[in-house]
Length: 222
Length: 134
Image 1: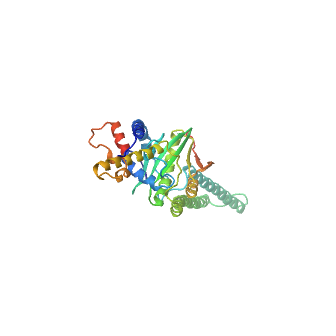
Image 2: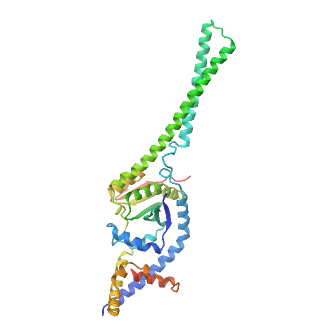
Image 3: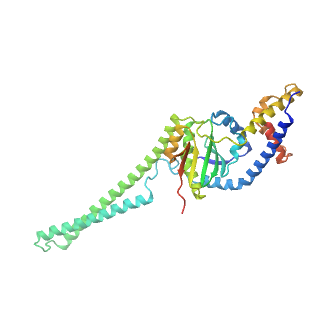
């Protein structure tokens, strides 16, 4: 008759206790983790989820560009008005010879041209802003395609070996031996396949087991 | 948009399967290990289902990422990173962590994470410094 040794069974019981402790710790951490998860899920993805019609400039950049355009345009208006006045004065020998209405019309034309110029510049800024947004979005997607074209989804990260991995393997061995023992008794009804599928199937779904018992049920199912 | 979801014992069969399929992890860890993160343990899902599991541990003022990838389309994994890393970064900054760190020997992953802002730290560790919220 085969089956796990007393030492192996002791180890398994210790593991069951350890597992129960872990589950208790997990429950204690759950509320805190739930808060973190809620936080994570409420944060919008900045680039991919914004799609192609997103702005590319930050509000500071946009503000700076618009201010620059306005100031530059105002400076241009002042210079144009001064130049017009200068031309007029020169033609009049230092004294304006145009009726005041004409003078005002010239300045209005300068102002209108300046407004049109500013509008064009602002349109250019807006266009460039969204073009940059599209570029950012395309860059994000291109990074994705680049990765999807060359990487192996498995084996990305090398996590440290877990403290209980050896115990995990031992528990598997114990269970296999136990299964063999049951198999001896039941004539092969119980097979290793149960062990391979893991311990979930061993959990008591009737609600009649304590947490510790469930932990034991789980470990013996691994 | 991906979702970060809490893990439970319901995840153990899938974790067990994914670990077994992962040559770097197979035989080195139990599925339950992924549920014992000091900062966070969670399942990452996109619209098609689970993509990866995360375990995040404290390491001083740094947050160490452990990742168990699923056997899913590579584009889904990449999209999850592009979507998820800025969100994790925001969460960790809010909790006053100064850096995210992960270990890898995968050149393609290291290259991709480099585009996301991770820099070589020491050994096989790569780190992204986080701006501490003022």
